[in-house]
Length: 219
Image 1: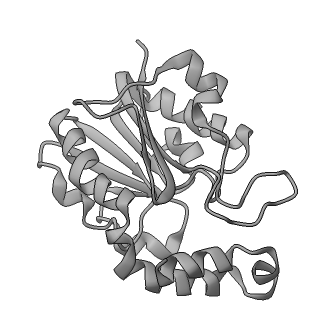
Image 2 (image 1 turned 135 degrees about the vertical axis):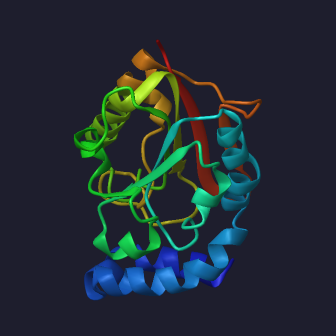
């Protein structure tokens, strides 16, 4: 197990969370993450498989939810014909985003910044379980994304399933873990669970708890 993974697990333990300020925890994790995350199997899959498949869809506009040091180069995957946008509520990551193509705000309010049916692909890899935690919050997020997607548009949700040894919390959910998105009514009612360009609808990894789920909006 790498240093980043160890620190991430320790930082989420209830006792540590109460003793160490959130900002300091995030700072330490960010420094380690910058060099280590690129080697995680889910991140390798993102760059080797997911991003090329999205580009092959020839989208006019893509919205990526969340900005980190290891994602700031993602815009280079897209041709000039595609508007690649990011959204994040954290003002600290604004310097990492592409000027003029970033929204500082909550993804649940993204429809205040984009017109309905104006985005071809939304990549929501990371916010679920780390800020968007409850089923209500997840459903609100997906409902907003649904309004923004063009007919038959694509949505990717990256999330963490239980099983990586993190301590349980009162609600029975481990920190960072959420309910399976396919169980949500808004997903069942408005999306098909299918992947683009030959990618599987669901991708799991044997050595980490991350899951990628693809959904396509119904007309």
